[in-house]
Structure formats: structure tokens, C-alpha cells
Length: 366
Image (cartoon, rainbow, N blue to C red; front, side):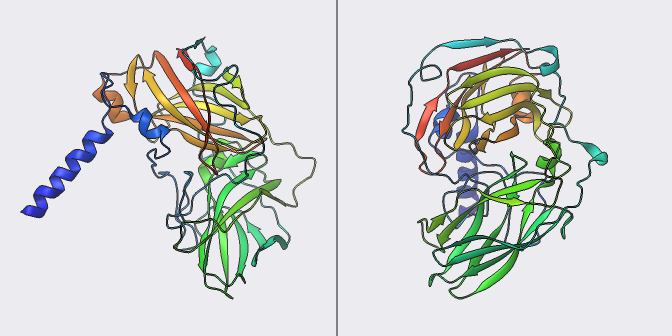
């Protein structure tokens, strides 16, 4: 009976801490801004061929967590938080999307059963050989054990320490996509393991032919909260036509274009969302440093909500993304249609977690 009471008490505290109401008494923005934002698993993810891998698209900070996607490069310019256009302040931007942007169309929608990935090959090549760690690409399969595309890897640990090797970020044809790869190795050991790409991000980006893959690795001493090695983005070409150009659909209303971030509103999708309603965006990093972007404060129809949005975008890359509004939260607040959306977002260095800047308030009316 005592355990039951304690369990109910803990569940009550957890439910209260995650609740958000129009009163704004509880402020999830502070929780998100702290870097400890909530992470939800991708409901479309399928286990990879490697039994220890659990691919997701959320950044991680410690090697004890499941493999996830993170950015890798270190800052190359000083932070300029709050300086110039787009820094902290109370300025508001009014945006009225075009009819095209207000409709759930384009690359973010599931491509359906007609989507197919064309077979390509990757030649055996060394991707990383540094500090006793050697990673070799051994080939590519467009349909792995679970049906997902996989880049075969041979990982060798000659460092003298037990290491955990995982993927931090992946891009295909200059578009960020989700992937998973995770292996722990004793000194002097090696392992064949696949880097598995999630299917849905490829569909959403309209990728049917993989011309090039870019990957970054995070390597840490197993069980120790320290970084052993962070690789740059490593390009892995395929045998696809070198003249192939990836189609890019960035049509919509530009709601932010400043400080190295371009954000395009692409529409609202309630039919294909896994959570309830998705507000669709195309993100582009036009700056000179990798970024982690996450929302700090969101109002739908002037009601404060706590949606999920946290994306890594590497330098020079684009990403199709969605601000996910939970069905239950919309219903609890009596929201049956979205008339307006208001939010700010934080740009964070994904390696140091240094806050680089916070956007002005962006207000969109539908």
C-alpha cells in the first residue's frame, strides 16, 4: 500500500509539472530554455539491425543514453546574443502566410506508398582514423534488415580505452535526416554495425536518390561523462549521377531570416500528424556555426501551450521540420482550429549548450 501511495504521488507531481494552461502559471519555456527540454521518441522509428541502437532525432549529452542525432562542429565565431536584428527584445513581427503556405502541402507530407529509394552503392573507404579510432564505410543497402537504408560500418578501437561510438548528425543531399548508430567497444576490439536512416525523414524531404551522405560521430569513454572525440561532418559519396540535383521545396512564408537562420512556414497539417496537429516549417542554416533550435514560448490562439520542437541544423544544411501540437492539449484548451500562432525560438550551440540568441516574437495569423 505504501508503494502504491508513493507511486500515485510521483505520477501526480509529474502530471502537474508537464501541464500547461492558458493561465500561464506553469511556464515550460523556462524548462525548455534550460536545455532539459522534453524528448519524445519518433513514433515512426523502427529498431535498427544493431540490437543496441535506438535511433532518434533528439540531441544527447551523455554516452549512457540511446544513440541520437546531434551536431558536431565547434563554434567558429564569438557569440553575439541579443545584438542586432533578431536579438532579445519585445519587437513583434506580424506575418500573414500565403494560401499555399496555409495548406499542408509539400515535402513535409508523407510521400505515401509511391515513395521509393533508388539503389546506390558506396565504395569501401576510411571515414575516420584518429586517436586510435578507425571507422570504415563498407557498403550501402537501400533496404536493410528492417527495410530502412543502411550504411555499413566497421568500427575499430585501438585507443586503449573502452569507448562508446555513436552518430551525432547525418545529412543526405544537404538535408538533415534522422539516423541511428551505437556501439560499445573494449580496447583492441572491432565491430561491424550499420548506420540506419529513418525512412520518414527521407520521405518528408522528397529524397529518392542519395547522391551523398554526410555523417558526424560522437565518441566517449564508456560510462564516463566526458568527450573523447567529436568528428567533423564527413562526406560519403555514392555512385549516383554526380550531376543529380536534389529537388528542394521551400515555398511558403518566410517568418524569420536573420542571424544565420531562415525559417519558412509551409502550412498546417492535422491529417498526417502523429501527435495531433503539425505546423510545418523548412529550416535552413545560412550562418557559419552549427545550431540547435528549439521553441522557448508558444501561444496558439493566444493560449499558452507546450509543443515539441527541437532541431539540429548544421552549417549550410536545410531541414524539413514541424512544431508538434498534441491533440490532447488542444482539446483540453478548447482549440478546434488554429487562427494564430505566436512563438520565440532559442538558438544554442549544440556542443557547448551556450545560448547564442533568442528570436523576437514571431506572430502568424491564419
